[in-house]
Amino acid sequence: MVQVSFLYPSPSAIPSRLLANRWPGTSSFDSSANTSQEVTMVFFFVVSLVGAYHLALLSFSFARFILSTFLLPGVSLRKYKAVAGKGSPGAGAGAADSSWAIVTGASDGIGAEFAKQLAKKGFNVVLASRTESKLRSLASEIAASSPSVETKVVTIDFATAGAKAEKGWADLKSAAEGLDVGVLVNNVGVSHSMPVPFAETSDAEIDSIVNVNISSLLKVTKLVLPGMQKRRRGLILNLGSFAGQYPTPLLATYSGSKSFLISWSQALGAEQQGLRTGVDVVALNTYFVVSAMSKIRKSSFLVPTPKQYVSSVLGKIGNSGGAGGRPFSATLWPAHAMVDWALANLLPSEGWLLDYSFGQSLSTRKRALRKAERESKAQ
Image (spheres, rainbow, N blue to C red):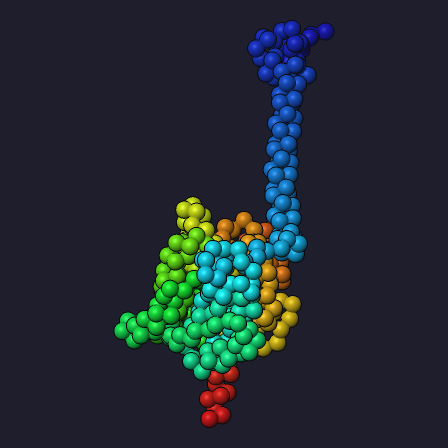
């Protein structure tokens, strides 16, 4: 019989070099298989570590959110008050007749409520806004509910600039001169009359938003901050918006102005902390509140009244609420905090939120245009 073993050579006839690489069942083949298994195991181990790390971060963030929003008390406002006649911190509410708060945009809504609640906590209040009659009415209301508190009224239109604004700014500077200002509430703000593409936004509306939301913020703070630093205590509350934290199409100028507020507040807060001035800066991230600006009249868990909102803020100073991880920022109304935390930690894509916001703004714009058309026909 003719052997055909040359077609199927025995392992002994194959050079060891080739055998090591080609012959099934050799130790080298087993080594390659083991290496592949080891790589797979290492891959899944690394993935597990990364997953565990992110889960731990998420758990920590959620625990911080719960503690800060619902369980931990805020810093007492006594920290920012002066003992009458001494100019030192730590007095009780009744003793702080030399301590002042300045509230911009105080004529109604959130600003008026800040003024009333700060007065009840023993702060004298400078009321600054455009409509003098509303400020006088608020001053009378404060005098009735807090008889020991003093008020000053400053009529100033924050939307104007240049020579037109000089008198208002001079009056505010004169009113604040020599006062022991412990709290500044930069509340004044303005938005678009309705959602509008940036290219169609009027120059007047752009100027108004920039002057009110940015320029006045800087000027009022620059006026008050040196005195706070000198006394080594102070609280600056800057009223922000979700539109600044999460960009909002068709409200581009307003959204950008509130983004500036957040960035500037964080930079200013880091300055005060680094220089150890004793001044605390907080950007308040705020969703909808019942107000003229929001055009919402009925309150709900998601949309508080100004009184509910301000009470929540003043009771939680020093906490971050839903803004945990963002320095010098706070989202303190519980429902707003929930939404903020969820958007920051659970949102799959910021692009999705932009698309959603565009759809919401576009829908609001269409309704506003239809309403304007009906009113025009009715005239």
